[in-house]
Image (tube, rainbow, N blue to C red; front, side, top):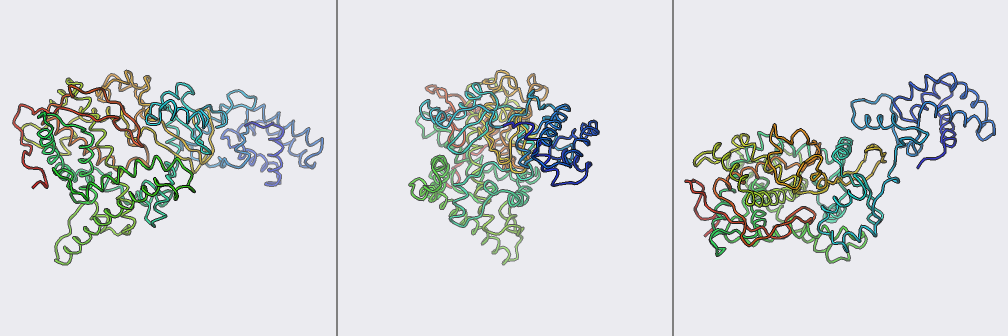
Length: 611
């Protein structure tokens, strides 16, 4: 909203009189109020006239006719140098520009935006009020009448066609700014500040307060979040530490190959594995538990332990109910059956996590008592470092578990789905794998570094099917500029990664599975935008488990393709994605796994944990 220039200047002059009593200070204060880096230069050029006006104004009380006339004169002087005053700045939102570091991305954007704005109405900086977008009722119509409730990722694309790359959506009192442009997503993420916030996740946070549980890296905010991340990061993100998990993950992969053999034999068709995503979910669950809790859960057994089944069910139940609970006002939650089930699911997750942590503590204490060396990986490191108490470790490691399962299971499902339908791509991957790991060699992290096509396949899969189709950011430190709009603090942005992943200007033939687009020197590489596909996020709030998830996917896919030729289900139909908090297949993916006609040394023994 733009108010009259005479009113603007009048308020500024009133504020300036309270701040300073000299003409020089008036000019400095005015420049700071306008928050334009070029203001000092322009005002100095107009100094004689402005100083004269200020000196006259200082002799008159505000509100007289003569003062009002002088205010208009000052307004015209300001307009003559192309300065524009924004409503948010009058409220004191914009910080002082004096002494700002020009290398700061957000300050540079605000400065550039200001330099192209004029008070005469040409190229004016816009606000959220100027954005188009559907009303709350229209959004409900799209979700429940047009049927986009489970395909909200596709709704991103449809709305961007209607409203452009930047629009707002209303969900009751909540206003969300949707961003469906790689350039604009970059602008948001580069201005996220020192302590970026995704969303409040009030139902997750409410549970922790209800049960007095600690917040983890997904739910904590501000300086407390930064402290947690600084403790968790090294063993999750440093390559030398991540590489040390390869043997643990490979053990789980070996057991999964045995599980595939058993599934083929029991399918009745000899080669078919039905509902592959469900089986890969168990693999991913086993793998991440092996890394985080340093223990096996029995997910690769023919008969999964009842306790483990309940743990897996609780994870799925919690994610499903998260979508339901958040639709209701918080004061209604205690009366909802879905809230009670939501709490019960979390209760079981923390109960099992606590049992696993206590088990590891007992092992450590026993080794210390026997004067043995204490060996271990992630959980052992957290327990021995004493940087976090037990409650904090429980909160963090439980949230890491939740974040680590779906990425691997869904991405490998989609990768195998496309490789089965694209035999040429599958053959090229197979040739790469056997050239790096001939014979019975099992790939390790060093071998993976020599498989660019394998990495390109995973990258292309994550472009087509980003596990998180839309991310969120809340601006908490500064107002920010996105495009030609200025947004205040506490604006909630929805980053439409799915829509951007299908932008033909960035990814030609965007609906086609083309791993080659990610190879160095590839034909489409030069057209790509660094923020066109960011499946693991960006900056200090990027996915904590990214490197572990990637290692898990690389090891699993390379060994599966080395061992099997994958073909589609002859009776199968195309599978489409849906959104259930995360992006997943709408229907089961059934594939044929045919043995490669080469000698392999992969395990053919009984499954781990089998009788």
